[in-house]
Image 1 (spheres, protein in one colour):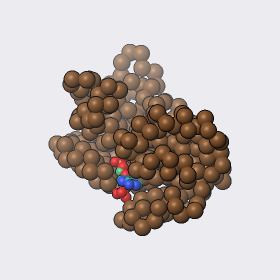
Image 2 (tube, protein in one colour):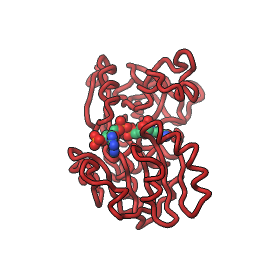
Image 3 (cartoon, helix red, strand yellow):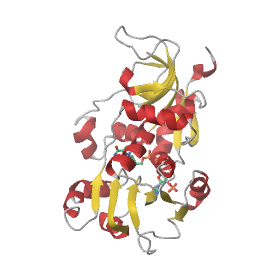
Length: 295
Ligand SMILES: NC(=O)c1ccc[n+]([C@@H]2O[C@H](COP(=O)([O-])OP(=O)(O)OC[C@H]3O[C@@H](n4cnc5c(N)ncnc54)[C@H](OP(=O)(O)O)[C@@H]3O)[C@@H](O)[C@H]2O)c1
């Protein structure tokens, strides 16, 4: 059992709550009513008590990871979905990490097969997944291009992007550049456009974005991958303990620094979800707990 100090909001939280489109209900949400009735995935806090089979943590340990029902003062979690929080980061920063950073790590490394020196483009570089994807791609030694709107250009540079494309002024599909790996953290182009922007043997990994883009990646991606040398796929993140521990090491070494846009108290979770749903958060939106400063 964890005394929650901070949680963070992910698009999945509002998608499950809205149950739109139907697709989400079929995949995870429950057809007529939500299967998951306690929202909130990402959590950071202090272990309050442990079950008798728990071996990795003890009361008082500071942890972060994933659970069900993180928007609460206390929550129970499985030890394999938690890691020790590095001492150099706050609970708020730790809560910003799990879903977004695991997604960024796994899409770059596992589906994207990122290599040193590759040209990597992150579309949707200023959101939760994108800000981690830029930093993790840099830590793999890639040359990173971030795509975001004007107001996020400086943030993209500050997290290490080598090149920044302001999508309100320039279209990376038509600017003549070709990429070894494209991560669509927020896909708003058609799969055929992304294919055009890939170089020889390039890989396109679709993480999130519009529903048309998701369906294209799921249905057309495997077919297009059969033609020529370019690969196109949809990606689903896994809550993997080994990867969470790897992220903990990245955080401790300062290789990734969570970007926090806004903080809301637990009583304003609904506002936090509404803000995220607008689709223009810069980095992560965090929930802070009222008992934060008490022991
Ligand atoms: N497949 C999986 O396993 C998995 C895992 C995690 C997340 N996801 C999905 O991945 C997506 C991203 O998640 P997230 O946490 O990063 O969401 P988010 O934080 O809500 O993303 C917001 C960001 O998207 C950017 N954006 C909006 N329109 C854009 C456009 N036309 N071009 C480029 N960027 C644009 C915004 O930048 P501007 O304000 O500059 O426009 C904003 O910074 C969501 O759809 C989520 O459901 C999937």
